[in-house]
Length: 83
Image (tube, rainbow, N blue to C red; front, side, top):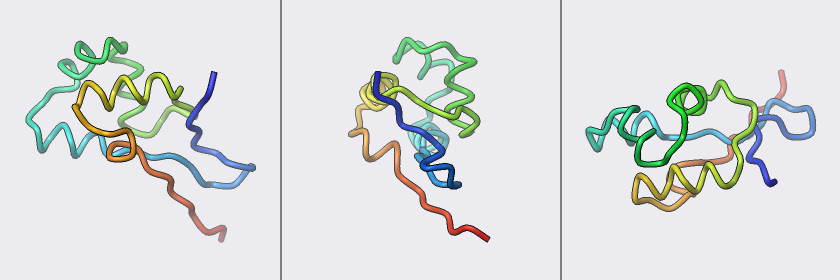
């Protein structure tokens, strides 16, 4: 299974998401997104808050589809410089 991960090569890089902002803008609750995407609310909350180390590509597509958006509109890669 393919994963979008929050750690790449041991560095503090990774895939982040805009789900919280999208839900707020669209007036959709996390519970409604969970229902639409058929993802457990607990897991969805971890994804939304970037607390989950990896998100499967299948799950990412389910979320994007439930929001009627492209996956790249919901998830993005963030590279942080090491300090």
